[in-house]
Length: 141
Image (cartoon, rainbow, N blue to C red; front, top):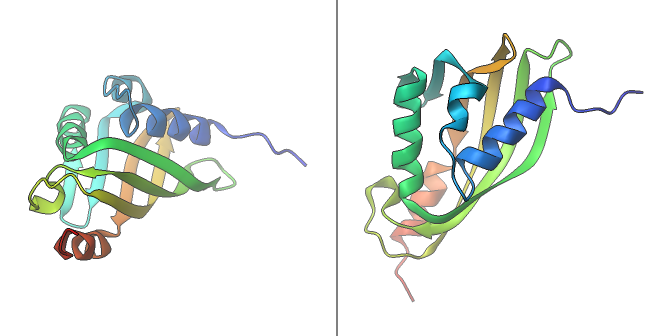
């Protein structure tokens, strides 16, 4: 039985470490993702590495001390798909259009990744935005 991590999981581990954890290095996107990388969100697609880098910069700027912990990760038998379940924690700096009140927040999600030509090519992501919005609506104590 081979328990080694496949290439897609290695790519994704490096991606999580650098893009959604401190010290953040968005330039890693240039060598981990294809030129035509797509992030598919419930509200539409972000197309291309440059557009994705700007989206990631904006998203992460709304969470001080952002930390992403990978809870589970597994790959399809052919290595063309990687699935991850994760949790992001940090302090609110205006996420979801809220007032930047610096309260602790937690956001969970599941992402499916396409691996093509040795790089991350497409990410379909679902996040617990409803649950996060409920956290942000609670009065600060």
